[in-house]
Image (tube, rainbow, N blue to C red; front, side):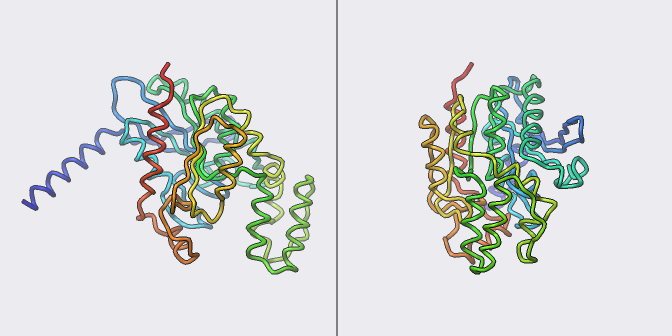
Length: 316
């Protein structure tokens, strides 16, 4: 009997994999080629497609970051969508992983450039007859980028997962205040104030270099001038806000700020879920371990809420 069950599971798993087309997908932006992954459920009719936008720094299409761990969070989320007959495209941002050659010097990166890339990806997907409605889904900083791109694409909806509701300099300031000694925090505050005002500052103490190195400051200037809640308020399409209650990087207050900015958005707070979309205790040891464990399952409620939201979108 056990052998029969295992054989049945093997056949079922193989069928599930075979029913989804996996293939590389590229985008020629005119200023460099971007590389991504497409998951397309086999279907005789166009299927909804979710464009997944990853978070800050060198986070790749799968949700992995060489500076912050391997989680495969976005890759796993893409497979959840595929299992529900929803296509997805996730991609390496310019300057990251396979798309490194599109921006080998991080001095050239900006929020506006990332937003333009998402718009170009969206236009490519909207022109493909295999796809139906386009939904943007952004994780962490990617939620801001997706929010900025959505009005230019006439998307069907937007999903913000662990997105900030405050200007990002406020988030960085709070995170640093929780970890830096007072003297170094004074210098960090001065740097944040300078960048917020649009000024470069090359006098960086060694402990602050990973965050404020001169080459990343142009990007930080472009990021700090954004107001996520104000951008969210401008959305004219259905929106879903998903936030974990055990997220040590972005808080419930951020999600509530987005909800206040767009009262008709759906707000989902998931108990126990952290920033990498796993159910993890609040203690730092467990949190940090989850950033290095791609085998941990995604929070089940994350998938069910996203799928229910997409299923409930108006059909045209």
